[in-house]
Image (cartoon, rainbow, N blue to C red; front, side):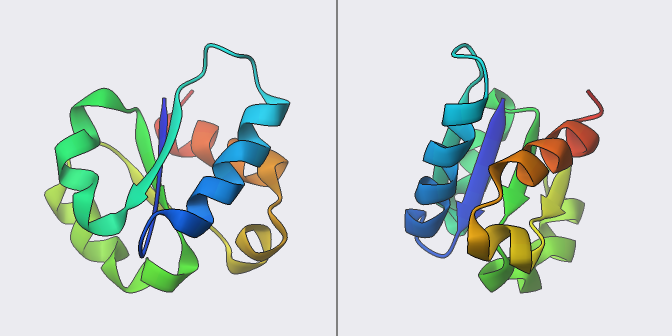
Length: 94
């Protein structure tokens, strides 16, 4: 279960669609604005944030009870869903 977050949840929704195309159907992936992640943390194994909100990474790591990681800018820009999935597995410890 992966939560993606960016400024408004729009650009991560594009990445989310690419990720859904390469994974099994029962994997839950959602994209939301970074300001809303606190309300979703009980439903996900990890949160990955877009580069445009990377300034919030340390704050989120301290305040959330699930693992948080920043998506590398190049993977984000080109929509490299495979690399982002690898990051999600590593972040979630799965």
